[in-house]
Image (tube, rainbow, N blue to C red; front, side, top):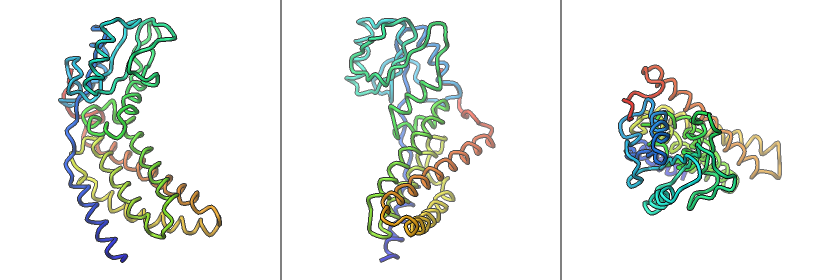
Length: 274
C-alpha cells in the first residue's frame, strides 16, 4: 500500500511539474486619462510584453485598475459596468477629492484605495490589492509584471499554508495526509516559479525533491509533538503543516529571487510594456 501511494505521488508530482504555464491575461489601467497613463507607466516598469496593455478596454484583461480623479461620473460608472459585463475584476484608485461615503457599483469597498491630494501613487499598496483580488490566478501575470512579484508570492504562500493547515487538522488516518500536503506544496512551488518568470515547474525539480523529503520530516515532527501534547492532535498537525508549508514557500521565494539577481534581472528581463 505504501509503495502504491508513493508511486502515485511521484507520478502526480511529475505531471504538476510538466504542466505548461497558463498564458496570463494583461493588466489594464483605465479612468482619468492623465492619471491612468502615469499609473500605467509605474506599474509597467520592467514588465515583459503582455504584462500591461496600452489601452483601457477591459475585454480580455486579467484585471482592471481604474483611476478616479474625484467623484465618479456617469462615464466612470459605465466603464465599471463594462468591466463587470466582461467579468473582469476591478481595483479602484481614488486619486482626487471624493466623499467619505463614496459608493461604486459592483466594486467592493476593500478593492478601493485612496490617495491623499498631492501624494504619488502607492504602488506597493496597489500591487497588494491586485494580488489579493486575483489570488492564485495572479501567478502567471506576476511572471510578466515584476511589481506584482512580491505581493503575489506572499498571497500564494499564505493560501497554500492555510490549505495545508486544514488538511493537517482534519485528516486523521495516519499517513493519508502526506500525499495531499506534498501535492499542495508542489503546486505552491509551481505557482511561485510562474510568478518569477518560470514557464513550467521543471526548473523546480530539485526543490520538489526537497519538498517530498521535508514532508516526511514534518510528519515525523508532528508525531513527536503529539506525544508531548496528548488530546490536541488536530491542532498540532494543523500548526506543523502550516508552519512547514510557509517555511518551504518563503525559502523558495528567496531562492527564486536570488536566481533572478544572478541572471541580471532583479526586476524583470523584458521591455517596459508602456
